[in-house]
Length: 419
Image (cartoon, rainbow, N blue to C red; front, top):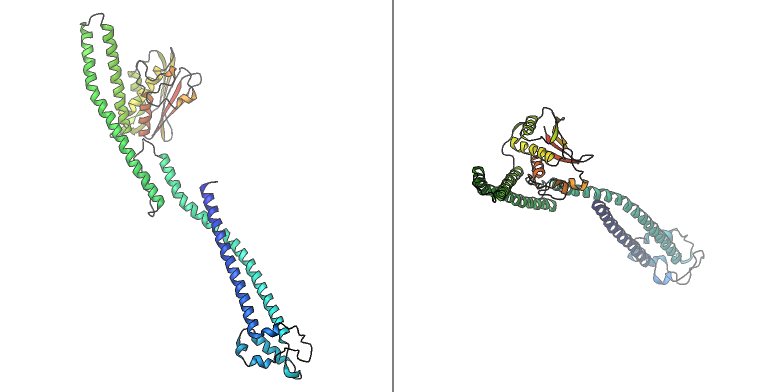
């Protein structure tokens, strides 16, 4: 059962137990009060010696132990509850009755029996109606408990839904719960404080990556220049030239990696420059800059535009195209499509290639992923950050990146952005 259901059942059970205990105590108290009242009436109106006799009232002669009613009338007992009944009975007896006496034990027994019957009737009715009332109020208590549980847990549901939507790329959001300063608001404020710390930690990490990448570019550029000049001028001995060129390629690869890291760090921060971007023009320009001689390119570019960072969008499109070319087969094909929907702009890049396992798709956007030998992330010209940068750029623009294994081998990468 859900927590809400368990809470309602617990509250209802507690109400039933408390109500049953209260009604039981009330019933016992009422029964005790009836017993005390009957005992008081009997003791104040009928002497104990008479109550022990069993004289019949039909005789005309006063039985042994009978007491004239005048004996009772001389006391204040006639003012006690029930004693007036004895007086009325005595006055109704004919005056010819000897000594005007009455067997008050039989009359007292009748009164005692009637009082007991009355007490039993009232007690039974009280017990029945108490049970009915408890049953009715149990339904009311269950309804109130359900309403209270829903009202309380709805706020927890809001906290859960908002916390679920917040990711490492959206740490700027906060719960900021309204309402009274209760335990639920304290929970929300605690989560907000945790998000503040996480945001600071991620920001510090991104700053470190950006600063480190920036600082590394200068010595790498110097190293590349120092290698290129002697190779260009032919001043390198023949036996050293292969090693020099290998070092030059490694330097160029490091520069591309650092550039990719800078782009990734930039894509994780807030957009500083937003402009009107013609997506079809960006895709067309990137296609012209890339060498696609080894594959057959099919382009279908519809006019579409978005508002965003043009440089980051161009980087994401270029990474998709490079990925489609690098991980293609010999004499393969590449399809590039740009289309506009009602409120979305979709850039789709489809390429032929080796089959991709479904479990691999979710890992392709992880930096430096090397799980599939046929799609090694860091090939001769790759950095292992291409799709990771694409996803980061897309999410920063409020879009999504959807990867699908192409039937027959290859990948379909669909980049969707708000129009």
